Image (cartoon, rainbow, N blue to C red; front, side):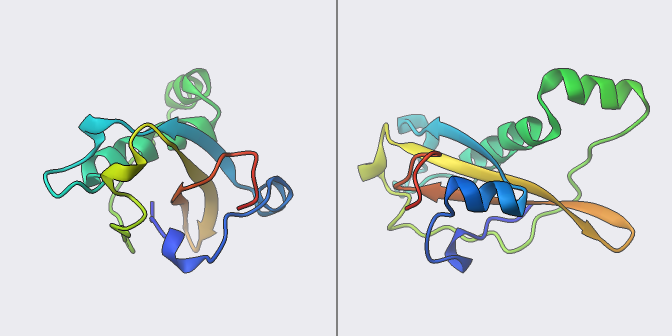
Amino acid sequence: PSHSSLDRRRFPSAEEQAEEGWTALEEHIWADDFDARGVLSDVSILKLFERSRSVCIGGPDQLAALQQAGWLIVVTGFSNLKVNPAAAGLDRLGEPVVCLAKFVRRKAKIALKQELWTHVHADSNG
């Protein structure tokens, strides 16, 4: 998975999300999601990505069906993980964040691209 919200200037509209194949998961961030610096912690980001990945797969039932069919969903690494401290600080406490996820074909494997956005709702366009 990659966290690349800094690569895009605005949150994609619902239409753009559908057209580009994104699945959106809206969550709220709380005090225990921040590290000692007052920034959304890497651990919290990874937990958001994990929940978003499950939603993108189709939920826990679909994940169980894939596993029963012999599929393994394995995270082998992260690339391009960036966090903008100004956008992920304690002043955002209790506000929603949106994690976008989509599967992307990469040569002989399938990758999951993920972005975490603050200051938006899943049904807004910026």
